[in-house]
Image 1: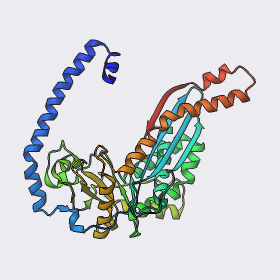
Image 2 (image 1 turned 135 degrees about the vertical axis):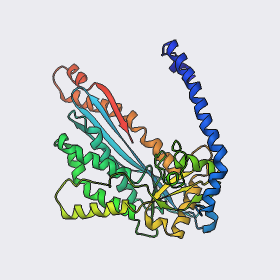
Image 3 (image 1 turned 30 degrees about the vertical axis):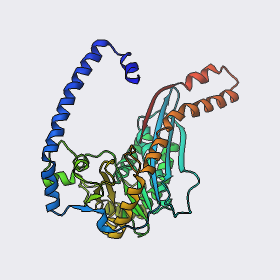
Image 4 (image 1 turned 60 degrees about the horizontal axis):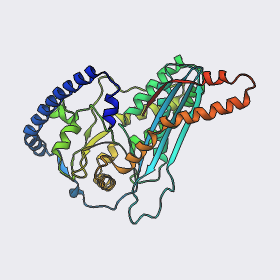
Length: 377
């Protein structure tokens, strides 16, 4: 029914051409799928011979850990007179183990909303602030395993882009918040990518990635990323031994907004930790795809910590139909609703403005009219 509604709004000739091309795309995808099926056993044997494939049963069965998922989103509402900018980060507790008596009574969150002058860099700056919020929530979560939705290198990229945009952005609530909270972001980032405490695990689980650490090592077809191939190869409970993350063409870089020796030292320690990150692929159940798990070197080289991590992921992926760990699924669903909530915020602000204004309120409604919404995670 939904597809019929969409198609009814398009010219008939356009719909026919799109459907015809979709048929051809289906044939191309089927051919590449069959190539993988044909080579699957050979690739699997290649991994086993090199000692890359292991089973979580080799690590024993530790107690089920407490878990938490963290995700964030941002919205830039372009109005006639100004921009309404918001971001939020949410931390959601996973399914509590049967023996666990401690629990969060409600999700924890951080939120920022502000009116800002028109600027094309607003989305870049607010995205950096969002990443800082996510990491600050993750570090403060009391759980044994804390999962972040995305790669552990993405915050570095987004924060660097945000800081590079500040000179063109100028003064405002966004630039002030980004600069003031940069130190806390570095401290949280350092904690997550070093994971010094043996009783705390932080991991990144990106749904989409173009990285091909194993593909490059074994010469797999370039049109498949590692996660796609390993979803077909791994049996339930199997994982790949930890390997270092693929290094970028240019060295990792992060700008420091202020001349401060302490900030520079923290930044350098973060960059060192980034270069030591490791990745593991793990398939908890037959109904889940292979999970790409990015983690600190201190976790990847410790069998006990890996065993706890796998036990937590398996327990939180026990529901067929949810193709990611349960707390990340919930966090993702929650933060996606930020964009749909912005019109309500705008309406509340508009009503307050009309209460304070003694002139023609139509001027307020024109100025608060929304023209475009940008959103992201």
